[in-house]
Length: 494
Image 1: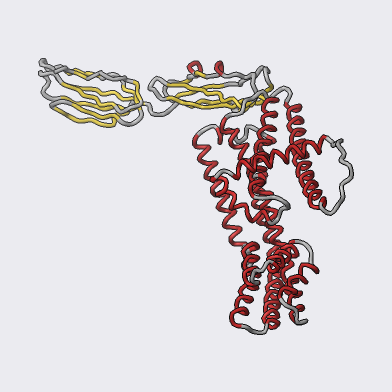
Image 2: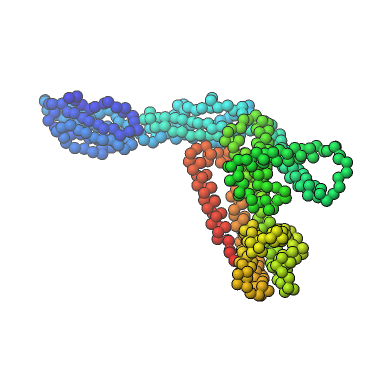
């Protein structure tokens, strides 16, 4: 058995130390002292092996006192055990820098200090030599240092490399964006003009054909042909047919368009987005990544959805607003002993806009032999407003049980008028609260945009590590939940 102190470990460490002292055979008993940072913290008499676990930070020493065979006092001293669990501290004078391409940079002063080892600035390692400061972007500089006990410290600084022709790029991007928007507007206008031309062409006599078409006319014709060819190809796909059903409601608010042309237009807009972004990336000497291509295409693909959702909501809102007038006209028609078909004709002849179009469809369906109950059910299914359901249900009851249609429509008219009046009062009472709600919803993203514009590296710590991404995800979830809750609270149903 080995006598004395066991020394089979690093005396400077950041882990726990198990110290074992084995006395010689001639030692019958001894006294030990455990000294920490110069102070005795434990003392006792033993006659066998000593085992001590050191698990707290500090400098430790053990003294053994015993009498030898000649009764002389002998003192054995252990080596000094250092337990250091505290990492060094790295101090960086400036953590964010902003330079231009190929510009020299003064990284400032970087130092490191450890409680036991003192100044460790000379032992700092960094990845500066591995970073390319000639290309624009945000560069992450890493600083590492370790003390003699094995504790490591890591800290970062960030360098934003700005392109030397940054202003020119900004103006170029802005110009490309404007050209793209104007291009889309021109396409939409020319598509509309072509549709109007086709609509009125059957009422006009064409003179000799003029072969001199403008460039915009040629582009518009080419785009329309591509759109139609793509829609024909898409119509043959079973998957596209299943998707097209959700776009049927948009067909009623467009002229001479079907759901397949709408899907084809969405795909073409997605590719136009890709072309524009590809041009911008080429100007910036960058290559698009696969996920960027997918995201940009999806952004363009769903742009048309936003436009048609907006149009559909406006269309539905106009029908809802004019529905009371339609009921009023029908009621007056019934008082004059007119039939339902005559009342419907009277509505679309005296009104204009979406409500006139809807009642014209009802009139056509009635003229084709459909029962008026079925025609009004189809109308309610297209529009999906409560007032249309009231009208359809009333006509259905009248058809089955009979009754005074004038009194029924007078009751419907009064009910709808009271509801309209109540809705207007609620809008006036909640308008200020809704304005505050919209301001509170818009302020957070605007704040992020303005801060990022003033200091592009301000949010870099959030996007440079996993904890930052988690925080961003939590903030987005809270923000979305806030919008849902506030809109739910502010929504008043009549």
